[in-house]
Image (cartoon, rainbow, N blue to C red):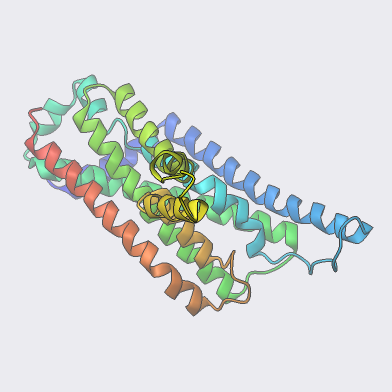
Length: 295
């Protein structure tokens, strides 16, 4: 052992031999499959209502493969993907400290920065691998339900979702390592990281509540609703969860019909750059805090 790659290799081996990891991966995959099934079931329900004449309008065309991923990307990934990343990182440092193995690790001819870099590499690899596995399983279910083979555009869109979701999860990896380093016990790290995740996910709701107190709503106030909406959107856009949701919706063309792949990517690249920026910040803070802390 003497480099970050050796440490990363050992960490990956530990993940694959961990029952906790296999259990979390299984639950995450089940959630993904369930979300895809819900997306298809929602369409089927809508189709039956149209066909029975209970609603106005023409019956929709057979579901596109991309359409059934809407619940997965809009509701599942912002919370579940962030939680998966936290579970894989909340005890990265505190767990070693609690088991008393950190001093043994540092007794090897290895620099301290290689320890945390190796843990970042291993956690990032496992997160991306778990996400890829879950997306492939979900795509297989979607193909089975819709009897449609994905086109090149569909594959590229799902690939972009994988890139954006991986970046989003990398942010919470950094957050988990940061709280694991700053707090003395793993359970405190888990609670703190999970609380921050919930705040980010609920940011649109929280910002709306704050807007009700901040924005003047007196008898002479004008355009109160519009100004509250502007305030809420201005605050929410700084949440990584909101930025990720916006990115995914644009990439998958959920809110713009007949949007080309190039148009979808061009409209979403700003959100991806923001996610990359906050991810780098979370990694840098974790690195600096770890390097300056007495172990």
